[in-house]
Image (cartoon, rainbow, N blue to C red; front, side, top):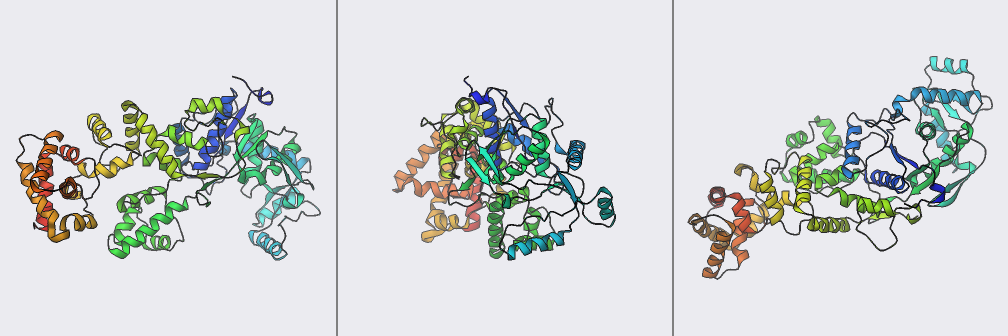
Length: 556
């Protein structure tokens, strides 16, 4: 494989997420591009967990991140669980290294203690806002001594360590954006060590990138403003500067940011509507939300707090609403193929330059280059992604689809399809033509595998299909019930023959007969072909469900 001359040395890239939850789409694209660059150059891809912000870290978030990366097929060469020569790969396990580096800067006069309170800093920022200028921390004329810092701590003041930033601008040489100039008035003396002794992101990332021999840093454009700080620290330590490439931001089609709050907003609106209509009462909603007390739940309804992902998913499933996919786990829960997500992620800001759009991970590794990454923000087209997944499912052999279907079910604990054997799952794959995502099978077929008492009937479907026109649908349903009960055998071919004969004898179109049966046995107007639907349900349960509907709504 030909390698660029400036990448002839061993290329080492890294993905360094914070353990705050499932992997966001933007983070996944960053991980993918780092992976592709390393593989293209025959180098190494590292995973580092940046867990220094103890207020944001979640107990099981790291496991979720690792699971998401593995689901995408992005396996790291060094990092958590696999180890490597440059560990530890958790920043929380590297605190002594950061303290030693902080001491070096103090001894060189490149860092100093500061003990401003939050209120004092906010007053300084407010003054800058009133003056319509950038806030820059006011460097003291004399740096506090070690003893003065200890005294401030004893008095209960928050003592931090700040970096003495050079009084000059910086030019960031970016492989995507070109030379980017950042003026001195946009930079100030930033914090290296927080009051609790833990490092800030800016401090730890520079030390770790050097220690782990990172040669290329690919990250989102939102980090561009941080890069001069990192370069200044590299200069202070005498480190080399890695090559930087700041990736275009991923936006929704309408130009809005892709945010986890989108899911929260969608569920909140649905819950508010359900509470108003009586579809849910508050105790039910709170139970689905994980059991928050009344005040906490009221605060969420008032858009003052957010619910966690599992609570949002339970409420969404209960109310049968589609959540916007924002995190990689969302796409897995919806039933996308991981190879399709990888393919689509790669095209968010990059292209191979030869017109191809459908590429495997191996083809992406062979084609990837920084020169083909654009500068403008990428737009995430969900309709196009669905088309990609539909095409991939249509082309996939049954074995691949079945394995992916199992993976989908493993991520959906509430699916009634989880207990089905491979033969039945294969049948579902066969009869659901034009399948887009695996969740479509759940929506179309899930009711067939529920206990009869758990089947929910869509009031609009009952009114439109069964009761409309003086109960025409109910009359057809009663007649067809007797026809189906008299069948000598029960399979799709015989059921189809009986329905067609009934339609011909009564001068009815198939839809006039199939839809009343469909609503009676599934509760909705959507299912696979009615002959396959009834065959899967079986004669006894088909007749039982029809009888329940006739008993409840009366026969015309």
